[in-house]
Length: 364
Ligand SMILES: [Zn+2]
View 1: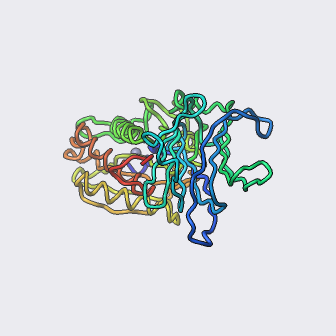
View 2 (view 1 turned 135 degrees about the vertical axis):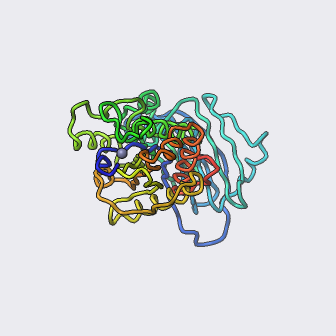
View 3 (view 1 turned 90 degrees about the vertical axis):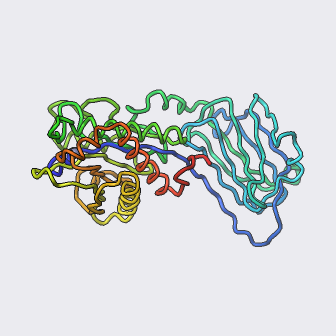
């Protein structure tokens, strides 16, 4: 409900994180690069104990990107443009065992575009490694190299277990805010359905779908609770939700249900903060998917000054799923299958917004 909207927010999720450390070197000539070797070993760098991945390459025209599919993962992907596997493509199953039981698979996923997928024995975070290139060194008989140093002491692996209550999260996470909760039921329908239970049910379904797709999701709440504390002011409650969203998150989505005194008022709408082009783009894609999968009247994509939209530092949108004060829509909102449809729409929109196939995974 609009009056309470300012207090609401829920949602978002995190998605995936994917940190892209990308270094690009202009391709001045068309000669292809070629893998020479891949090896792993332990060493020290910058005074830290590191696990090092070293990739030898024939030429110095190294066009590569490194990413971890979610903010916490045991998989590292290194994509090399204008590069062929060369002799390494003849390895059995395109897979090589490395020191410490790690493996790497090598695939030319497109013509002259090679992907290395490292499967590590430990979980790492997107801030726990450093990627760089080194030039050929004739004296040491070393070729051009990509080096990835992974900080062995980084505690990122703890993040998964504390997910949901963690304020420290990795880049690219998706924040999902289930509006209201605890002492604040939000709007209530004629049959007693509360906004706080609907928003939580839908938010948790979105969380499940995103997580299953390889995204990192941050929930402002996962139970029927106040995010700040019972008795907190509106501003305190909403700020507590904003505080759940790290500055390096990918986006923030707050889920709500609308309310009005006239029970015939109906439909879905999405909001963005005035002047936020990315927020507007997110709200527009959410609106499109909710029209397709929710089937309700479309009240449009609207600019607003809601607290959580204004105070989050990442692209944000607030969704009014339907009018809980309309008995027909109240029934829909409390229906598990309909909630699944809404969650699917939101999940697809998040993927589309992030440039991911809406039916695909974050690490595809
Ligand atoms: Zn609300």
